[in-house]
Image 1 (cartoon, rainbow, N blue to C red):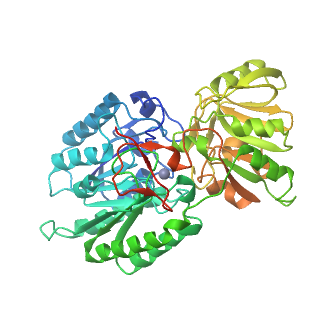
Image 2: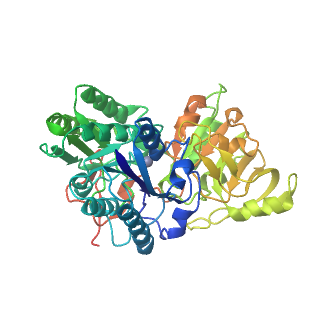
Image 3: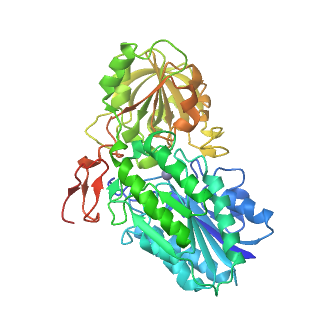
Length: 499
Ligand SMILES: [Zn+2]
């Protein structure tokens, strides 16, 4: 079998200011920069990426691969029209030039919004389908946070979605996509087309409550595994609620009669679980008080404060300082904060050198009602930002975070980087000489992904609401494009304004 493979990934927070240019898809961060043609194979090896798992599985089956291109950009604002057009056109041109193929596999996120293309993934899949015609198989893998559209379902033979958040199964999802492709390739295309069922769940699930490690989402995923064991091909995406598009929200997809029956059962379960998608949110001062009151005792491991609203993995700027300010004001002994995106502070630290004392204004370059935090800091460590991820989520990622530094302000240490990145891997701290297991308090710019690597060492995990673009209380956002029946899980009203 000859299979064309490509990837084009973006999770778009349509509420943030600024757009995502072509260059953002070219430069590497935790994941590779743009890879073209055969570069894709070597450039994605040994990563926890869907394309990696797919290539491994395809090679094991002896399939011939036609690599087209692969790129991703960190979550941010609308993808610029020119960037979306250029990358989509390039992908289509390469597919057209690749010669005859039996199948196409695309590694997509599923929550990309481009200027003029609110369903950017659906539009791309439709273009691919129009090019290859009805007889070539088309399979795409999607992130757990995909906002699945009817177009995406109709254009493909199968969609395969991550089953975990934190996403520790990205490569496994690529392997599952290859497995689905192999199953479908065994059947004649002249057979009756597989029945597809799509149900859009009528409520948005806040990001912080989407973890599959516990609570209602763990129940949902366990039920999916059960139904699948009985033969129901079914997929579930929790959706990315920070996208003001008609497709926003969770989706359940079923294939075949058995899959369609599973969709009905899972819709009923979601209705039962709806009121459980809630999360306790603390202000920075409440979190500091809890630590000072020693509510969490002197036991082992750090108390983790998830600075969820400034999570770069959801479009946060990674440089707000509300939580950092509270920790410094209280001079919380043994607190470590990271990773603050501040290229200027990193450069100043590198110029001054290890051991120097510098006056620096930290973060807060993007507003949110904040001003930079002026501090006198000791430069404790410097690093070049090139290191390999070791945790289950970022496993094997070759980080390129630019100049990094560890700055000490009183009893608080802050890790700064020159490239924006979610703090979801211990290697990000060890790279600047900090052993996170030994911290008393860890304030991480992350919502849920940090749990993959830090969850086992945490004495307690608290979610803190400090300024940022990943708004935790969805009722504070103003939507223009949502479907009329959509609410926030638990019945909270959506704020709607005319577009
Ligand atoms: Zn995701």
